[in-house]
Amino acid sequence: MAYYGDGGHFMSSPVEDIQYNPFSPEVLADPAAAHKELREKCPVHAFREHQPFFTSLSRHEDVLAALKNIDVFSSQWGQGPGRKPAIALFSDPPNHTKFRRLVNTSFTPRAAMVLEPMITALVEELVNSMSAQPGNRADLHDLLAMPLPVIVIARMLGVPEDMRDTFKEWSDSQLQGMNMVDPEREIAARRAMSEYLINEVNKRRDLIALGRDLPNDLISELTQAAMSHDDPLSDAEMLSMLVQILVGGNETTTSLITNLVWRLLQDRSRWNEVVNNPELIDVAIEESLRFDPPVLGLYRTTTCPVTMSGTEIPGDEKVMVLYASANRDPAAWEDPDTFRLDRDLNQLRRHLSFGFGLHVCPGAALSRTETRIALRKLIELFPTLELDGEPERIETFLLWGKRTLPVKW
Image: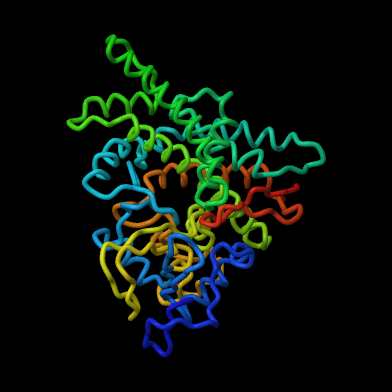
């Protein structure tokens, strides 16, 4: 069932010829084609084969309007397809303001610059390990794109590196939970992760109570800030915030790196252009974010009936806000379905891949920094890099990235 528009006049009547299912294999394989059909034929689409029901917005104008209007398009019931109260960074003001203030100083562009020496040394270590692989072949996902953000966020949090794989599994389970397929696995992973994190928080609380120095890490910073805040955080709020930081600093950056390298290597002229003109690295990153956003879209819940593109969406309706579709809308972008390295950098940064406004991704600067350093090292060490087979897509329907990226040089 869908709301259908024809000739610019939109009605709230169902049609049978618009078959859009974001969970279907066809859409998972090629979301851009499905999004194009939505924009052209059914920009406000009601999907009724899921509980709870939800509506999808696909046009840039509507997506941006929804992201701006937090009073009508609320995060109060979470930013995934399920329906559970949001907490911490995903909540609405005034709660959101409290949490955002706590993390802002740790994720500014200036903070990302401070981390550059550590990230550069780590990238060199990972890329050198990749170059030592037998037969000049490797999976760039496994050896660089996946471990890089996991290790960076683990170091920031103060998590031992021997727990890296465990944290990656926990994080992946939270993302898989958005598919609503294996809730037991998500619950078990969240329980284990929560036990670990609250134990670390309590260690810091004990040190503060004893007047002793804290470890120099993000858990210490957040614990100290939360305890000194006028409205101290509960254990549940602290845990939710730490989990969101962990998950947000993980898969999205991995997908950004794999999407970027994959798209550049699809057409050798693109890769060669960046190799020969490293000043294009930032443009390549932003065009990758526009063209292949790691997050296809997130959800809001309407607080009252609202009309978008001439169609009324009922109140208390889950709404999928499709960043990826907005980024390919010809009403907002010239030649939107072509990956181009000649776009203006400032114009490119209008993309919505990190969200917009109040809920813009706090880790955007860190993600860009990690990707920039990784790509610079790759073009330096592997100027002849090429694909070595087809990559495999990650499973989570909300995300767009690769879980394998075979390359050779």
